[in-house]
Length: 274
Ligand SMILES: *[C@@H]1O[C@H](CO)[C@@H](O)[C@H](O)[C@H]1NC(C)=O
Ligand SMILES: *[C@@H]1O[C@H](CO)[C@@H](O)[C@H](O)[C@H]1NC(C)=O
Ligand SMILES: CC(=O)N[C@H]1CO[C@H](CO)[C@@H](O)[C@@H]1O
Image 1 (cartoon, rainbow, N blue to C red):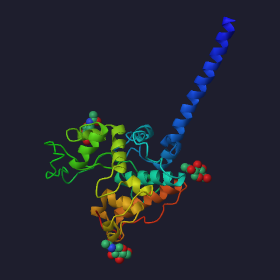
Image 2 (image 1 turned 45 degrees about the horizontal axis):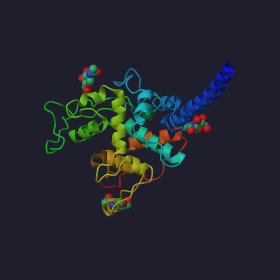
Image 3 (image 1 turned 30 degrees about the horizontal axis):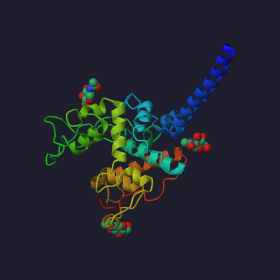
Image 4 (image 1 turned 180 degrees about the vertical axis):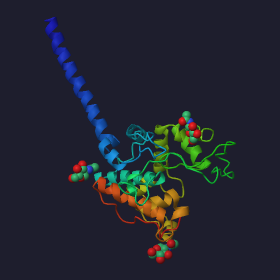
């Protein structure tokens, strides 16, 4: 009797335990960005990131991308399946341009060479805006471009570090030394609104509401507006800009790999920067 009760209870217990366990695993898979971006898709997007010619060889791993995305539960998980895929494709395209090792006649084309660099080569300055007293530069530190989004300037390293738990002003190098932190800085930039700019995330999921100034400046939602948020001061409002075209080329290739259309307003040549 005792033994059969034990057996029965164990049966009930194990059934509950096992179904709860697999439910949790299922929920994790469903909610996780890995349900949209498999390892296979990631590898076919970043065909050459670990090429011997790439300074970031071995740095940007699939696992650090997936792990970093778990800190931003809204990323790629808002809206329809098409919206979610398009947002992730846009993010991967923008970080690819920022870190590209491609050239016009590169093997597999110029847009198969994202995530080739982890830090800016021969920066023109330390990217210290000394007029910014909220995020004062640490003597001798460089706030040059690092990581997938090429985080730059003290006023980005400071708040990114504060949000993510590292000392961005005193230890900016960590962004090119730790691949998990590197991906987190890129996602932080993507998800965070920096007034008057909307977040790239809100633009891609259709939550952006243009102000009167945005309307006059032609800042209409679309991938072009994301480019404007990232580097509009240097790249937007210029007809047929090569850098903008490179960003668009990456997005077109990735949208195809995700089986989604790119949506309209790919360019920012008619937009004023923020
Ligand atoms: C907005 O776009 C129109 C049409 O493309 C263009 O003529 C106009 O100059 C643009 N406005 C600004 C502020 O760039
Ligand atoms: C895109 O479509 C192809 C062909 O139908 C399929 O093999 C692939 O898994 C799809 N990719 C995604 C990310 O949905
Ligand atoms: C330990 C390590 O990899 N350190 C590197 C951190 O990044 C800087 C440049 O940003 C390199 O110079 C260090 O070698």
